[in-house]
Image (cartoon, rainbow, N blue to C red; front, side):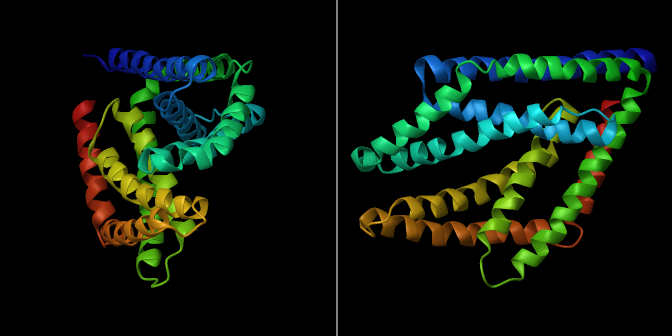
Length: 276
């Protein structure tokens, strides 16, 4: 296949990938507003995170990004849904707390529905992407090279995070905020790599593994702040947090080990050369 054809095909595959995220955003927003369920909340948050992650990548590679107002609206949607998500996860673990938590849960749900009801967030995202489509179309002859440059951006960012993990792993005192920061970064890299390769790859699998381990730690840490009576549920969560921290530290230490990200970078570059 000629390079121009490859570039053209890549443009349409990337556009379809973005459209699918926007469709998921719309579907889950409507579900949350009309007949709320926890799965829709999770999928909505994933769609928003993907859009924000790709926005960072596009800004660094093709010079496009959402306007500040849209970015803030997406971030606000994440922020106001996070407390509801935390309560839902806690109640799935400890349903006996339903009565105690029901008031807070409904308050967070009402706030989220009020924010999403008339927002038509997906339409704003679609309008925002018109500039990106035009930019990508104008540069479609160079899209393969842009993809290679984008991969280098992600690899460099992952290597910086690896160094950050080395400092965390060597610190005896647990810094939950720094661990949570690494978790969010790994989510971002995962979504960026899945986009670049249009599917799961070695890099996104590693990022998901770290994300899951650190996510468990963060969930349990948040649950402890929500369960204040120090009863049996509190004790159970505290024990689980201790065990989850041990698992997470192993994962963080591995990611921080010398040459780990370098080896991953070699594999990702090899995969991309095969995909050309």
